Image (cartoon, rainbow, N blue to C red; front, side, top):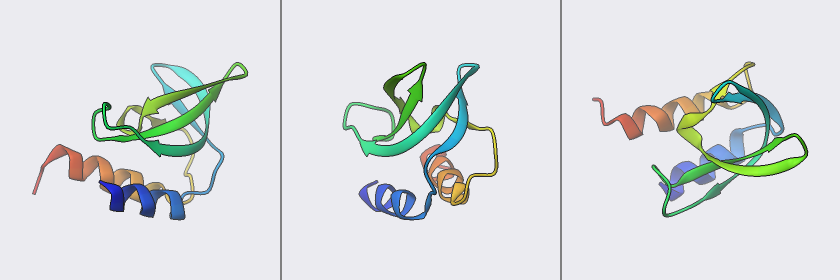
Length: 81
């Protein structure tokens, strides 16, 4: 998981737009949280406040640079082979 966090942070171009439960947010970074599903959270801005959201909960609105690493992380979490 720490490896994915490093690769995602190194390859994503922040900020980028996404949706979380139907709300538009701006993703400004990522962090690691042991108590969150998968352990990697997106730091999102919405209406002037910052929130930490489990990375798999993001719906990427635009083709964010490095998005393929989020997709790879979601695939890894799914346990599919």
